[in-house]
Image (cartoon, rainbow, N blue to C red; front, side):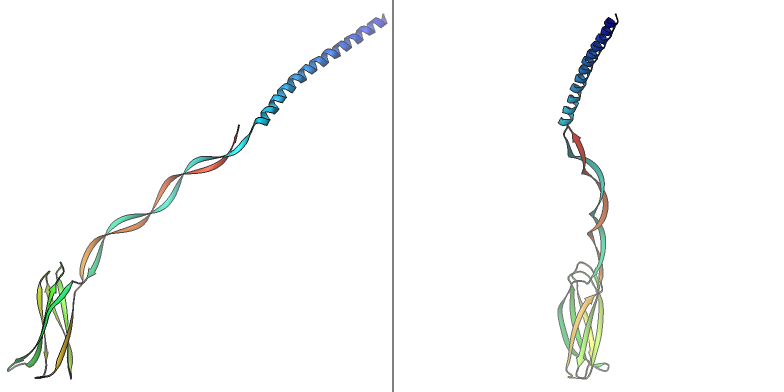
Length: 194
């Protein structure tokens, strides 16, 4: 009987080992199948760097026009129409003298004060005389300068003229720097995987 018991015990041990082996084989087969799916998925996963747009606010400077009143000075536009020099005598008083009559026309649209400077010269002496008159647009004004001389004495004169500065205004366009903001698109790198 002892042999039969031993045999039964061995039989059950072998049977148990075979069943356990089959179960383990089945479990490993199932795990191996799911692991191979995972490995195949990992092998199929492809990643790449892509540029993704995003928006930011940026400050910048721009030249902006604006209008301003500007004041400036200028002389009147004038023209000498005629200039005549005569020798005159005043009996019982002054005696001999020279007289220059200079006619100046205002060509401007503004009125103003005009100075005519007359430079007299003889062989022995010289003198400067300034004559001043107010003159309107398109008006001709006579400027008279006199210079004492001896009878028959040679003399010459020269003259120039200029107005007092006239102030005018005009609208001018100027530019200033203005800081503004704008939305711009920038790009950042991100990983994208399939």
